[in-house]
Length: 80
Image (cartoon, rainbow, N blue to C red; front, side):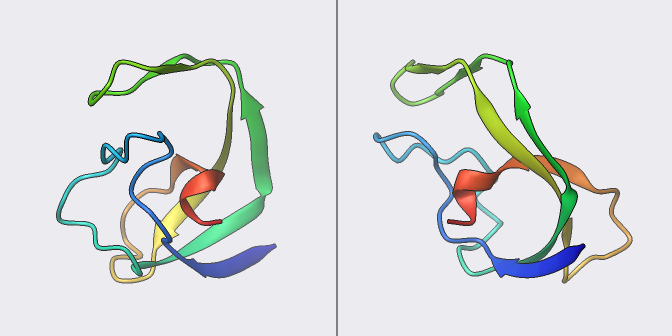
């Protein structure tokens, strides 16, 4: 199922270092494919403070403003 959600934050780290490019504004709308929700065991290292996250919950997303882009997995925490 596809659901439309707004990007709530650019970071999933307490230091607030942006995970996404600065040109993606908070509030940008995405379609999230709930059938692709998964728990990844990848290590994400924050570019701001160096903190590591071992487990991520990701979901495939497509930008509403550019639906021709390929879907990309993003942390679900950016939309909550």
